[in-house]
Length: 451
Ligand SMILES: O=P(O)(O)OC[C@H]1O[C@H](O)[C@H](O)[C@@H](O)[C@@H]1O
Image (cartoon, rainbow, N blue to C red):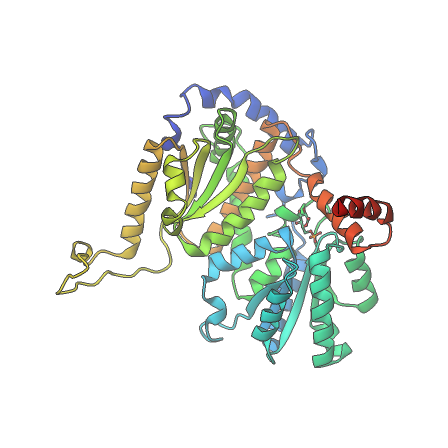
């Protein structure tokens, strides 16, 4: 039995039964491109085998570093953006829930509080974060594959200065953990010069595929989560999703159906959940899908909605707006906790018909009702159900979407592993900020701005 339950019954109104088998030959071709490296971007496929083929010595060092951080710090400041932020943040929320940082150390079972910086250019956010840290002991994990990204570089400079003023240079250096490329970039140069403990983002793993490298593993381990189980879940998924047969491989089937829908005009996909602690998982998914597929003037636009919250805001649009949407629900079969709805003698709120039922049951009924209503309203719906919110399930889920987007991208004839479009705004920003080397562009842009 498949560990993840994939349900595509609610696309049948929109996809004729011959259409999925018709995709088989194209999926086989996409599979060859992905597995044999004959497709575009082949140098960035090392995530495929990462769950078994990773550096075990470094993995042990990650655990040791996590322990040291738990022992000498109350807070770990994780600095990074994009793939160097979203994986760790979404995993910690998924595994530890929304109130993790507010819990006592005993409730956190020794895990350190984890906060994130360098994922925007907001001075106010940084100010608030400094307030949160106050005089607590802290360490810093700076994460950047390129080692040159502006947002994390600025935040790192600021937190480095704070570490030095609080602990002195020697101790500050021991509280800095750098996760970056093995050889290139300004951060690697700094690591070599200062001797920080460092971890490597493998060459063949792009930022958005890096959550199962030290990028995600160190912050996740610092909360006390079981990173062995995380890797095991992904490893098992990597073995379960190799058959190209669309009746057997649900990750490939999901990729095929997305492409069928896309070609019919369903150009926006909403990643949805019924558990608030999965909100950031959708943000991770959005980078994975959007950066992988949005190029050459095509691609599904990845969006998200959090239910039942957004049924009271976006629900109207999903039910009756422009019919170009489809939904992919990530459902947790057994959430970690449950709450029973109490009996109330007065029944002034009229809720006694729910007495004795659990909130999880009500949530499930909401899900069932929503799927039927949206489907009736013209929205194809797929559901990806994981048994629980364990590390194993998370690893499995991560791999499901990674392998799906590899296949999906090749089905749409693009390179799923590059992101050339991200550079355009950066060049403009550098020019406007007066970075050396961008003088000519600066002159042109400043003229345009004055028009
Ligand atoms: O890890 P870094 O090199 O700092 O990159 C952080 C992020 O920024 C870039 O703009 C890329 O488009 C992303 O794919 C990447 O995850």
